[in-house]
Image (cartoon, rainbow, N blue to C red):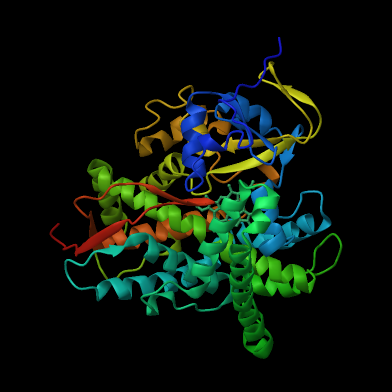
Length: 464
Ligand code: MNH
């Protein structure tokens, strides 16, 4: 028997918009979806419909790549139009440039390639450590801002051998401000009908200006590479692949415009989410002292409380508990909180809900990752959810922080290595404490991060 996909009360003109807080679209959608588990439908003022999935059972179906494929929802389409073009993230799967760039860039993100990134990741982290070493006592600062400095500098060094020097300034790198404005503006526009959007020409004008500022950083990166071509001949970074590598199938290199899009794609995708991951993971550790203790023990065991010793690449994979902390943090607070797919042809899911070809389907990760049918105590932070024996028995579709299948995250291993390294270096050296009256809330800018996460540090001692 087919059922209608349920939805909340519909309003004239605004349709479902009154149910959504456009400052926190994901959080408010999760709140509504709880009342409509495992599936609901939202209609936006522009008439577009979104089917929202929050159970692993239905995710298992819509993530079957023989029936469904990644779709560029309106936010991705806007990212594509204004910023990222046919770069990997916003290219359509059927486009020749997606497959081509995927083939060219994939090898540099495999397990073997990760070792090459280790020294650069250490270099970026050493700038964070140098800054923290010199902080005054009892000084509160925004942890997320420093995590963003770290991840942004890391992708600059690993990807483009380019030092953004984010830690040398009290202000965020100008690129970060431009990106923040652009993502927020694109997120807000997502909900507005096109005729209203046109009326917001001041915002639109600023969007264009911020995007050209971001593009000028891409110009700097390309210029540096061209002017000092010789110096970079033997460098093993992403940019050299983007510029020189030939696709084994077509024997072509990437074209100049596509190279620009890839540079921006990796600049953005390569730091935003990892910064969110580290921020949430530290917040969760600080507020769950038992888990923090286990993490300290592991770091002390494997690396020692020796403030000068830097982890070797081979040691990172021994930090099993930290790995589980990161996985569990990605479960509760997936920094990229959703992604969309669409049916290849008309179909039925869960044997009861009809899905028409092309219908936008949102896999709402904070809801999926707390599916009561799959997780015991879903709201509880418990790194042991990722013990190996738990992982083998769980439905793999209950946990998708890096997306799905062919179009899943190319930077997964990179992000986890970077986050493990940063967490280990920090725990080796510091105790972290939150401001007394800290009220946890989430800031949404397409991705999610903790808001105003102010912490202070105390140096650890050998005797701790
Ligand atoms: Mn990443 C795709 C999450 C780190 C580069 N990434 C995706 C998708 C998710 C995602 C989800 C799929 C989106 C979709 O289906 O529309 N990414 C993350 C998370 C982290 C992350 C949670 C960190 C934690 N990503 C990184 C890093 C890089 C990167 C680091 C680069 C160095 N991600 C990408 C690219 C894609 C992507 C590129 C698009 C891949 C493709 O479609 O071929």
